[in-house]
Image (cartoon, rainbow, N blue to C red):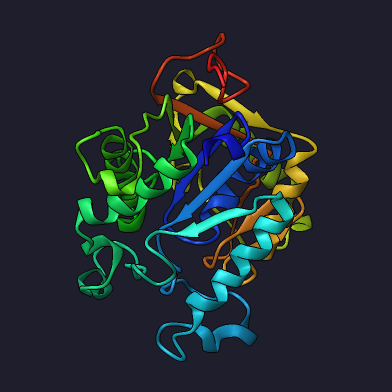
Amino acid sequence: MTGQLPSRRLLLVHAHPDDESINNGATMARYAAEGAHVTLVTCTLGEEGEVIPPGLAHLAADRDDTLGRHRAGELAAAMRVLGVTDHRFLGGPGRYRDSGMMGVPTNDRPDCFWRADLDEAASHLVAVVREVRPQVLVTYDENGGYGHPDHIQAHRVAVRGAELAADPAFRPDLGAPHTIAKVYWNCIPRSAAEEGFARLREAGREASFPGIARVDDLPGVVPDEEVTASIGGDPYARLKADAMRAHVTQIAVDGPFFALSNDLGQPLFGAECYRLARGTAGAPLPETDLFAGLEA
């Protein structure tokens, strides 16, 4: 299948629908527009998410428990906005259930992602890696950005999946081994976070949110010197915002700001930043191309 694919191939591993648009929407839009093959693997349907619009409250897990199916539709709509045609659920839709926030009873459900056997879950990713043979992988850091069990597990599955995909002794039935050249963690430079919140405070009553989050509430905030790549900006920021709007149950977008179910405003970052966790930087830092230094 390699001969049928573009020369540049990017794989992203995320925990729930909407995580991809918030973290990497501009990056995905850019590379899709440039002709790269962008593959998104989402690990759960996000069944335990809190629903923002009152008219859709019946979808929630404690009522109809149909939110996961609805969020799959939101994800498909977001991918159409970004131009991404290859989006999949790990092991198939509904294979792993959303675990909920850390420490809640749903963490103990036997079918939740947090309880998944690591190598079994990673084997589903191995099949994808060996099929599309990406040069670049993007996912969360070891803490999942902010400690959500599914984000931590997504990190573990991504790392283990990349390791096993390169091992010729592991599941040869899943395809020929493949080594991913560069692995990046999502991050936000602290200066960008502080500047974004300053703009939000200046907007004051022009922003529609009753409260404002804090810099330390954001996932993956790191010192500026730890950032190794910055991707995005116009015109991709507009596409990112539109993709986020597609996740109606989870995100409220208001111009250059957005809020989740807590209704606390936070900046919408058009430029998306990364830390290189594995591989070699191919350009002076910060890189402006995740494929820098890689041959087709």
